[in-house]
Length: 207
Image (cartoon, rainbow, N blue to C red; front, top):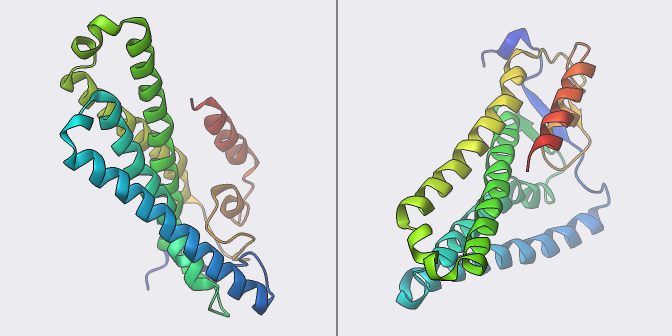
C-alpha cells in the first residue's frame, strides 16, 4: 500500500468503549437494537411522507430530508462500531479513518443548517401565514436544501484539508470507538496546537 504523506501509519487502532468481553457483548446487543430502531424510524417517516399526498407540504419536505440526514449520520461509524464489539483487534485504515471524519463533519454541518431552514419555515408559517405557500415555494425549499449541503461540504472540506498534509509516524491508537478529528490530530508527528485551536474555533462558529 502506498503510504500517504510520507507517513508510516497505514491504519489506526480504536480502543472502543470497553475491554471487558461481557460488556462488549452487552454493548453489541444494545447498540444493535438502537441502530435498527433509528434506521427503521427514519425510514418510516420517509415512506409515510413520500406516499401520503396530504403531507406534501414545505414542513414535511424539510422533515424527510432531516430524517435522511439523521439516518446517514447514525450510519457513518455505528455499523463498524457494532462489528468491532465482536473483534479483539479494532483497526481502521488511514483512508477509512479519514472518510469517517469527513462524512461526520459533512452530514453534521448539513444537519445544523437544515435545522436553521426548518426554523425559518416555522417563522414564516407563524408570522406570515397568508403568504406561507408563496414564500416557501419549491424553489425556495430547494435552495435551502442545497445550501444546507453546500455549507456542510465547505465546513467538512475546510476541516479535513489539512489532514492530508499531516505526517503520522506513530503512535496510532485512537482513544474512541471511531475516528474523532481532535483525537486523530494529536497523533500527528508535529506540533498541532494551532490546528487544534482552528478546529475548535470553526466548530464553535457553526450555527
